[in-house]
Amino acid sequence: TDAGQGVQITFSSNSLL
Image 1: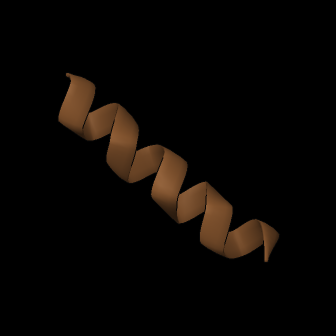
Image 2 (image 1 turned 90 degrees about the vertical axis):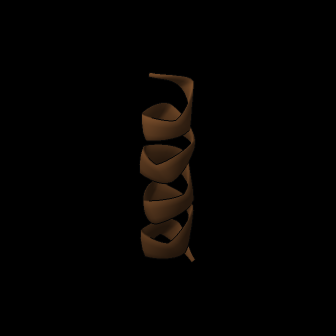
Image 3 (image 1 turned 45 degrees about the vertical axis):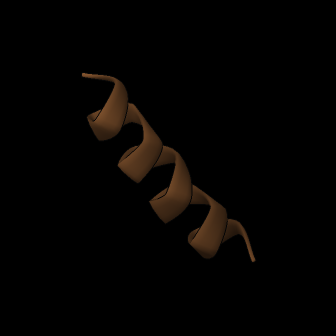
């Protein structure tokens, strides 16, 4: 779902930072 993707993207971004 879009909501699930959004959470994954946010988590990935935090990991990159």
